[in-house]
Length: 160
Image (cartoon, rainbow, N blue to C red; front, side, top):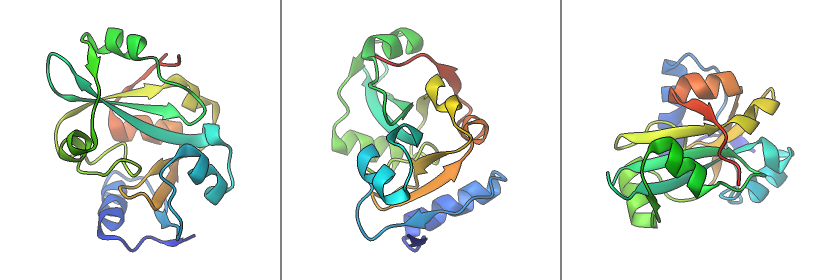
């Protein structure tokens, strides 16, 4: 683990500071693109990873992001009911265009386009969670309250 050096991770570190969230964005030599990879590298449980799952709204065409606990499967039916439209698959090109990030490094904030965000209520079990910082090698810790403030999203039951 080392201090962030990638330009995208540094930009996100700046956005976090501007939001008054004082935390360190760190990078790893090995990828941390999955919850399991991140948990091993960080030394925490998979559940403490705040993974970002992106869907495409079928009617609106907009990105719908669920920030979920790493140990939870996301119920597409519950998310669709919460956002009021069906969900479609979001391929890598859509995710990159909508969020500005590559799959495996999608941060829960700083998106390229408007994105509807929902937070998994199960993340509130922890005093701190770890989220991607814009690259498949970078992460940062924050409290669930900070995550909610940063995203402006509501806590929801999204678990399958």
